[in-house]
Length: 337
Image (tube, rainbow, N blue to C red):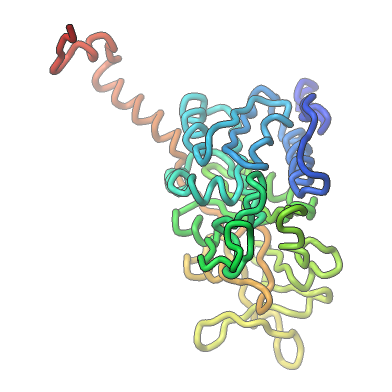
């Protein structure tokens, strides 16, 4: 790495006052991102942070990089244009569960299926925080909020299952305050060629405090989290004495190791496994199961912007460079008097 690229976390922090509520999980994610970006060997002017609307969408102001604070749900659209026009940029989309899965739902699924080489960080706190506590697309059924005083009757989106259904080539999950894991996950997302989708559990201590308490607490985390590692069995627990196996009915179950049950009986994680297996991971939820963290899916497919460039090059070689003025004057034209 050249001296010009030896950045520190401080180099990635802007001069803007960070204005999230004290104790918000966004602070931990911002700190992790600044640290990771500093170590990627990329000049600051080669980073672009694109956000929509929501508490998470203040992110571009706090990063000493280029950034766009766009409109509600449309960050994937702006990011797509940036990446196609400037494929050498490292483009990161910062969004929330409301911004990306409600008004932006159509945009996020098409970004994932196209497989542009951009990175998505979806902050999920299961609430609308910026507008002061309404239920969101990931709020659990029965959730009482200002907009659902008698409990939500909606079924929540499962972001991981949605990403799988859209054909995302890189899907991972982490937690705001689990710093080493979050950094590792963001580094893996950057290294992937194609759209990386990182689902981050993020606590909103004002309007939905404690939504992920068991996952965020160091003492309870080992029993409530299943850390995925490629090629290794699905083991969890403080003493690593529990795992996931498949029953004769093709259903997952938690098995205690010992008394005849060994690691050989457990499911081995495969990031390139069939969608049925990956969807099973997406559906694991407490209290019956631990929550999977880490890289869930990672497969290789051509990046969309590279295919766009190749198509333009092929057509230009065949037909020559176009003439914009000639194009505008061709076909049916008319004068307005």
